[in-house]
Amino acid sequence: MKTERQMHETRMVDLRKLNSATKYPSIPTFHKLGDKGALLDETIAFDSSPLIVTEKIDGTNSRIILMPDGCYLIGSREELLHAQGDLIHNPALGIVETLRPVAEKIVGSLSHQKGLITTVYLETYGGKTTAAAKQYTGTREFGYRIFDINQVPVDRLNDELEAISSWRESGGQSFLSENELTDRVAKFEIAFAPRLAIVDELPTDIHETHQWLKSMIPETRVALDDQAGGQAEGVVVRTFDRSQIAKIRYEDYERHARREAKKRK
Image 1 (cartoon, helix red, strand yellow):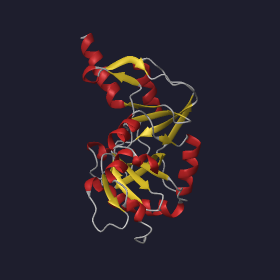
Image 2 (cartoon, rainbow, N blue to C red):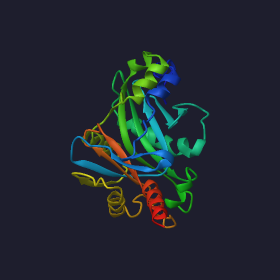
Image 3 (cartoon, rainbow, N blue to C red):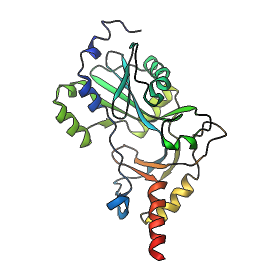
């Protein structure tokens, strides 16, 4: 356990600013969404190839924040839930109970970089996390997979809260490239969001994209037991340098297909 002196730097941080600086940004849909979630023909134009395709897991976005002084915090997408050494934690969605051993393992295997806050992003799934939990488990088991890592200069916390939020939403966070991410996760020896394929391009027609998704991931790769429903949420596609990213979800394309079928009646 860290001493009070070792934890001094973390305890002096404005937690509102830390929370904002380390939140995970929203991932845009590949086909843009119009009114009431309708899919539009316009797509995200990836500037480079090849592209890495990974499974998108329907759980709750979680994060382990590694501070320069070697301490860690655990959070959901929106709020911080626990700090190393705390006697009390927020039990929301089982995130802390599931990820505390993971955080301890990561802290023990990572060389902390002075002046940098490293945030490990994971999907915590199963249990009672979301309505889709039954697709991954029939026994309410919890699982987790790392899907991204970024690094933020601790000096960023000197900015005003509003400036930090604006910086984050405009893409200011610096994420590890695919190669850097793969190397880092290998050192952690912790499960990764499944890598499904490397492709040169994506179909742009809405129907063709839906068919491509079906071929890419007909069922989840991360079921936790034999009683899982097995339905996948979709995929995430990104460039290798992580400069561009998009999600392709079954829900969006199935809704579009139903609307098109109604129009033909």
